[in-house]
Every structure is written in C-alpha cells, then in structure tokens.
Image 1 (cartoon, rainbow, N blue to C red):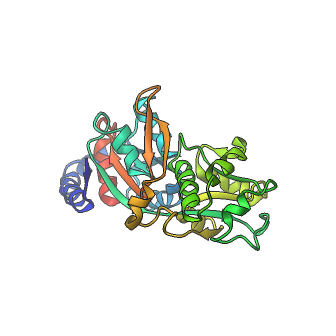
Image 2: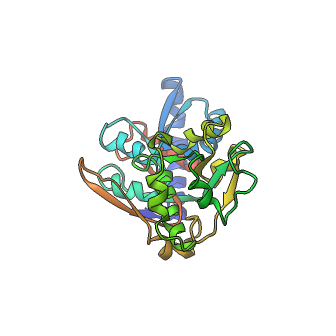
Image 3: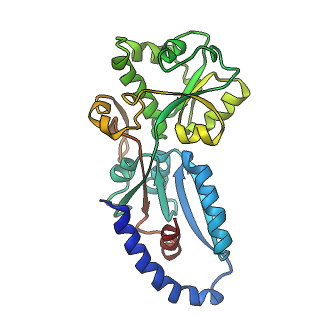
Length: 286
C-alpha cells in the first residue's frame, strides 16, 4: 500500500509524542546503545550517512546501522535470507510493493526523485566530443569501456538498459539496443552502481550509468539526457513504459517484468522490525 508522506508524517508525530513520554523516560534503565538497522539503496549512501551522523548526535543512545546494496538485494536479504532489518529504502518504490508487501511490510512512502545520466571523466575516451546527441555512437566504439549495475540486484542497472531501449526509438536507430548489448562485456557489471565510480576515477572505465544525484555527490562529469529517455520526468511515464527488463521475481525461478517509469524512491518499516519503536522514531526524524 502506497501512502502519502503527509499521512505518514501525521502518524509518526502522534507516535513520537508518545515515544518521548514513555520510552525516552526509560532510557536510563536500558542498554546504553540501542540500534536501528537500515537496508538501503547504494545511491542513498551519502545522504543517509549525513542523516545518521546528525541523528546520532542528537540521540546518542541510538546507533543507526546502515547497510547499502542494490535495492533488489536489500529486499532479498529480508524475504529470502530473513536478516533482521527495521527500515528498507529502495531506489525504486515498486521493489517494496512487489517483493515485500504484504508479507514483510504494510506500507510504502515515495520520498525522492532522480534521473539517469551517463558519467565520464576527463580521461575517458572521446570525452571532448561526447554529447547528448552522440553518446550512443561513442558507446558503440570497440575501444570504449562502459558499465552499469547488475539489473538483477540494482534498479540503476535495469534502468540503464531501459534508457538504451528508449534511445533506440528516440534517436531513430533500429537495432541500437541489441548492438550495444551484444558488444558489451559482462565483466563491466557491478552489484551496485556506486561501485562503478572507482573504475571511472581510476581510468579503468570510460563511461558508467548512474543517477544524477550520485554523479553530483562524487563530482563526476555527466551527459544530461533528453527527458524522453532519462526516466526523470513523470509526464513521460507512458512513453517510458515502452521499455522493460525482466528480473528475478518474489519466488525462486519466478520472473518479474519491470517497465520503465519515472524514478521514484520508496521507504518502509519492516513488519517484524526488531527495533520497531526506535525505527519509527528515526522515520519521524527523517
């Protein structure tokens, strides 16, 4: 169930007032450090780290434990591996809907937006000539090394493939997707998109698909793509829906078809969260 941020905010404020009056008054009798376990998308690492530091400074009795990964992998750790978790934040809110609700979570709040970009550095081959009009021709060159995240583990990976599918239509270049993928080396795939950044900066990769927020956080150069293909404008959702990628489903051997849609993050509280009270308190702060 997707609920509005305003509704969640109201419910959390009610809880927070009760929490402050009850649980907070008992903190002297509790262990000196309590914890909140958060599985989250790799693209949220830097902003969540900043939130963690500020929250712990104001609430030193609580230890926020962040565990970044691809969003599908985060969900798998909950529904397959049964690892303890309080909060899960996904780079695609639909991962929570399709892999966690209703067995492991009851609601899902959309809380952030993004868009896809193609990142590079000054040392990237053809860096002086690459643009929003010719990037796909650059990637077709045999001496160019480019990469994306594993689409089975990280939404940024299947979104990279969707961008290329949409580009085939937008640039009127039949066969573009098949050509790029057939010439692509799987050794340039990483479990989560942020792991590609070190390859870019070391010069071992020329181009990598990332979210715009991640590119800005790491001071990377990037190509701003047209709205028709960057998955960043909800007004093009019907057009984005022409692209799709099949990924592993909820059960072993099952397949889940993900269609293109504007990039929207989601966050939820896990039903059997081992530290539920403090997790809800953190959500009210967030």
